Amino acid sequence: MRYLIISDIHANLEALDAVLAALTPLGYDEVLVLGDLVGYGADPNGVVDRVRALNPFRIIRGNHDKVAAGLEDGESFNTVARSAVQWTHDTLTAENRDYLVNLPPGPIVVDERIEICHGSPFDEDAYVFDELDSLRAFESSTRQLCLFGHTHVAVAFRRSEDRLDLLAGPGDTHEVKIVLEPGAMYLINAGSVGQPRDGDPRAAAAIVDAAAGHIELFRVIYPVEEAQRKIRAAGLPEVLAKRLAVGR
Ligand code: ZN
Image (cartoon, rainbow, N blue to C red; front, side, top):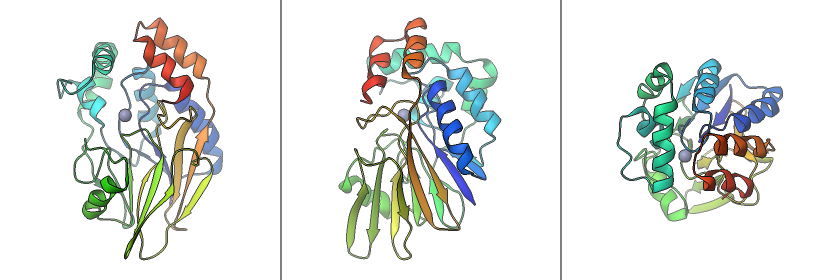
């Protein structure tokens, strides 16, 4: 089974469509969505419609989905995120809001080899940035490969008997292929489709080949200016348009 991994789309339809256009020809059987379909970007309905049409094999919610759906109040959000999520809540159709309301929390087991979560396998809202964070996540992980999102930073950690290795991180997550070695566990963030924050503005996504035992990380160029134009036209905070150009 080959899975397309997409996370943190954040209502950026241009980025999502570019990822689908670039990676569909590589071939995948099913789609895994790791949450945060909306928030920040200007196309919440377009993105939710697109995701629903993909009919994901497994999909979980992110923290922005929860607030946009009205399940949480967003008091932990900063001013920019809160104003964007309020706009998102008001802009979503009742049907799409309902879809977000019903998204399950992670972690969710995908198959005998893979599980997915938004933030971490021990807390859907916790961030895994560095090796120290990864240690706790590895302790809670129940599968060889735990895929996560939330930080918008593509990264790959490997834990074997007495070692913890950083296999890929900022600056080297384009066309990286990681072979899943027996006896090792992996904690991998494919990066953010719609709002990368690792200094590379290209949309990030991955394909896992469960049978072959490998994962490939990709970065895809998309029309950033069009996504920015829509953010400005919607009256969303200017910083949300600006950051897309630099991937921060
Ligand atoms: Zn996010």
